[in-house]
Amino acid sequence: MEKFLVPPPPALAQRGYTVTAFQVLDVPGDITGDAAVLANQGFVVLGTSGATSARPTANLKAGALHVDTTLGKTVVYDGIANWRDPTTGSVV
Image 1 (cartoon, rainbow, N blue to C red):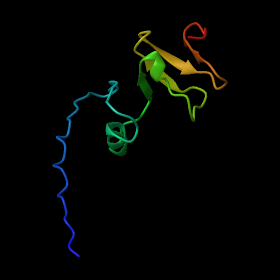
Image 2: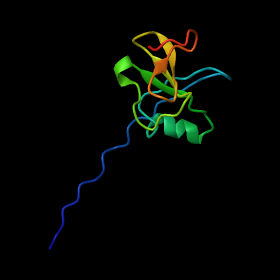
Image 3: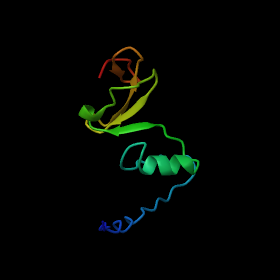
């Protein structure tokens, strides 16, 4: 029996990033995409970013950071059930 094989699609163009020391870099995708590649090259993953509705909900630890683009601020998970404003401590 013969098998028909289809070649793999061409590799997607790699994105290039340019940063200086201590600069924050917001990359697309999740920890399995660009972030994983950059982490393997020595970058430190600080947290996630996106709309309020995109905040992580699973496997969270106290102190997890999320740059909330809806609110325009960084929020911190309190380890119980709430995201908080790190400046005021209020639930956001």
